[in-house]
Figure (cartoon, rainbow, N blue to C red):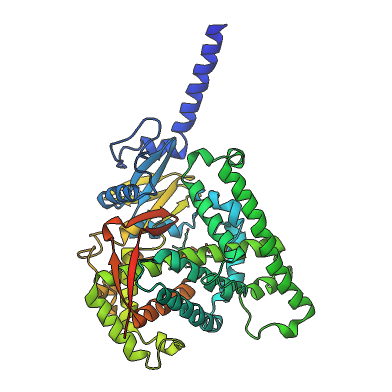
Length: 492
Ligand code: HEM
């Protein structure tokens, strides 16, 4: 009897091991041509519990190995073995294969459904075609008025802080949330100046989703559902859904019953409610909700982080800050309240500096892809097979600061982006908004808000960093600054 049980256990183990060795993870693991960091626990693989991957220590660890092996290396997390790259040629070749998003994104699927960020194949293609016009230049022009309004409130909020040190990321998040909600959904929560249900629910839910990504014990839905966080998430998500449904229903009523009250200029929600597939059918309410959630989620943290890091980097590089200020002052001749689109496009030096800021601290530090078919890449003359189903982590953050592509990569040098210098580099070495068909659909929107906010802040204040040694990065889809405090002195 005991012998029988032992044989069953042993053969199951052998079966599992053979199965794993022939899986994408096993194939990558067995390939000795692909380097891997030596420190590895047999059970957990590379993650170090005292320095989790999302913490400053984890960010530095990932950067260290990607700097060392920028073309390709492998990382093991438990039984999963994935590729890591920061090489523009490998990235370009992978993007050409049209891979799907990797399994890491599944933690936000519960929240963002099958909206543009996560959908795949034909569904994604059709949706992207339908929604891309929502960010057409003419529509962006109408958003500009809102950008002016929300950034004016932001400036007032900073003024009200007086001599206080400002947690700039926190403040920027309320600005960018206020902006996307007003621009995309026509929802005026004014969350920068008052408590707003929709905005604070979005804020709390985003926090819980991010916490879950890094908690392996929450991987299974049924386990998560039993935890305190899981219960809180469910409750918040239900309350959030009620508000979103109401916003959508109110606008639908206008479309159906009082179209004369609709604004002449359609916003994102109008477009979601009116676009039609080739067969004449419309998006379902669930589809509209998913897309609204995706765009609000993608459209606030990213730009909030970009604004915060840019103000930090400029304050540390005074020579460039002063040059930007002189430029802004010479263009904003009537003050900064109603900046025109023409004025905004007349700030060439600031634009170079903001590109440099996104290079040094890109808001989206990594993206992941899963190969749908076997694929071979050439690494230093050796051909490496990447099996179908394997996951590739693309570390934009390291690629943007690798000495193979940038001279003195840690130095703040905006002239890298002058046309004569840009031409010398492979365009794939700098892709903060990703590239190819799945690049950021909100890029122009983000760039406008980013430029306008930083320009207005520079026009109104001088900036200084406080307690620099305490600043840390938290990588949770977005590269967020922790403990980033700035002091703002009003310009006379
Ligand atoms: C500085 C600000 C921003 C940065 C750096 C940024 C960066 C990115 C990156 C790197 C991706 C690719 C993600 C991936 O492949 O997994 C992406 C996708 C996306 N972004 Fe942005 N983003 C920003 C702002 C925005 C804004 C303001 C919006 C909307 C208003 C937006 C909407 C989206 C959407 C919907 C996708 C998915 C596109 C698709 O898969 O077809 N982003 N973004």
